[in-house]
Length: 152
Image (cartoon, rainbow, N blue to C red; front, side):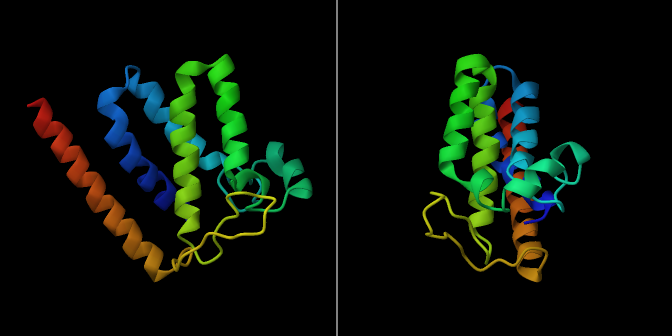
């Protein structure tokens, strides 16, 4: 999926959980940034194209180590131990990335190194992703409006 779709999809979860968190700005920022981390192993991703992450791409194939639940749980556990305030927002953003990538034709191996691929029919950058992106934007608008109406 494209960056815009990942961010918009993560925003759905942010808007759903935002009323229940205390540090709202931190929650939003960490969730949005963590949704980008799963693609560190791709030279075409927003963060993966940075030189500091290029060494990872020599050792890790895209959608393997960084696209599985075991890795997410290990990282989230580290956050729980050292930065508990950030743990849930990191988990939320990262998992939203994995969920969204499982909608693509290529899919993800959620239980890597096991071979089972979870996939669906959306083509990255294709018309189906664009239509999905528009749907996600409409859901975000509804959630934003409902949050605003609850405040008023």
